[in-house]
Image 1 (cartoon, rainbow, N blue to C red):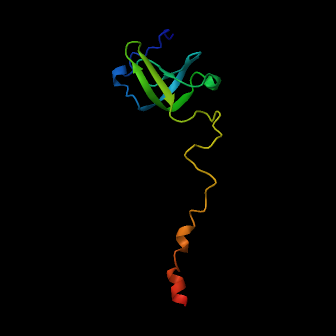
Image 2 (cartoon, rainbow, N blue to C red; image 1 turned 180 degrees about the vertical axis):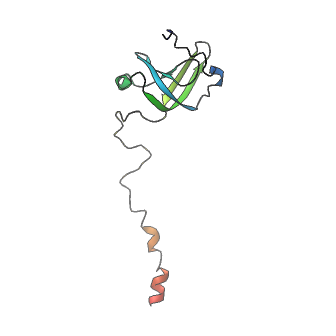
Image 3 (cartoon, rainbow, N blue to C red; image 1 turned 30 degrees about the horizontal axis):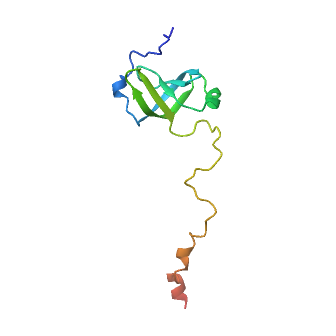
Length: 122
């Protein structure tokens, strides 16, 4: 059986976990503090997701592109967050970088004089 501290003795040491790097992992537990993920280290990472999304996670689900945002050596806690919104939960809005409704800029370049084929006709 698994111990209560979610140890993985053959995993990589926390010293080798890179902050800002992305890892894949498997959900090991879902609790009120978040989702615990085995991402290959000696301790599970704590994935920060909105509490209303916890129900989307089940033990054994594989997750991809989880970014490490902090590693606390004293408490042996790794905090992770999804690099992209997970499972399409409440992500119907377009990304803010996409500006809609401007349009019309694409066609300007074609009006800068006759094309070579038109010149030959005259």
